[in-house]
Image (cartoon, rainbow, N blue to C red; front, side, top):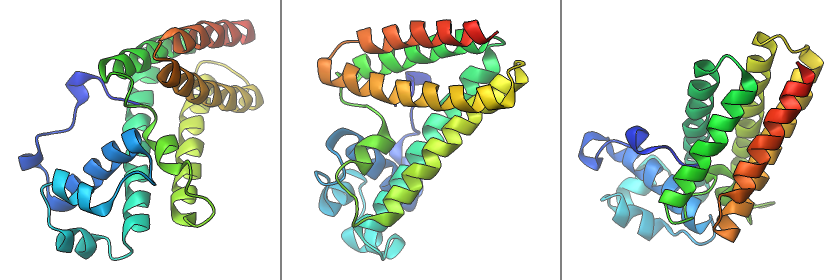
Amino acid sequence: MKTKPEQQQPHADALGTRERIVRTASRLMQRQGYQGTGIKQIAKEAEATLGSVYHFFPGGKQELGTAAVRHGDEEFADILRRTLDAEEDPATAVLVLTGELAEGLRDSDWLDGCPVTSAVVGTAPDSPGIQQAAAEAFARWRGLVADALVRAGFAEGDARDLAYTVISALEGAEMAAQVGRSVEPLETVGRHLAHLLRTYR
């Protein structure tokens, strides 16, 4: 799930070496998947030496992959918080969010889908750290949505169930939009999620 232009990462010179490596790994795995991304490519695009990559990540690619997933987690959590805090009505927030995701995906020429899902697919069962980081990411996102719904007056049980629905639907719609090179799945899911939330109000 891609950030909007004003939220793009700082220039590489402004980042420390470890942060550059993690952000580069996250971006590459978002576009190429975990299996399609190599340590050498990450080092080259992060303007770092292989030695520095292994210095910061002695566990190699799996340890770096876990850090990349956690970075993707934080990136999307920030988008969720900003959108949910800016809109009093959760249904409106979902419509704004799906619009931003559609715009970011289209602007990246359909390359930048969810950094967490892209990194995780194909890693189980030999990468438990990455799987755990992804599970924690999805739980965090659901928690942010559920908390926003409770603040808006939803019952806690409904908020928890709806949060599962919102995050799962967004993940599926973003993948469908990326594969089909069309914003229609995200726009359609946004409208239906908004309608669903309003029926609970």
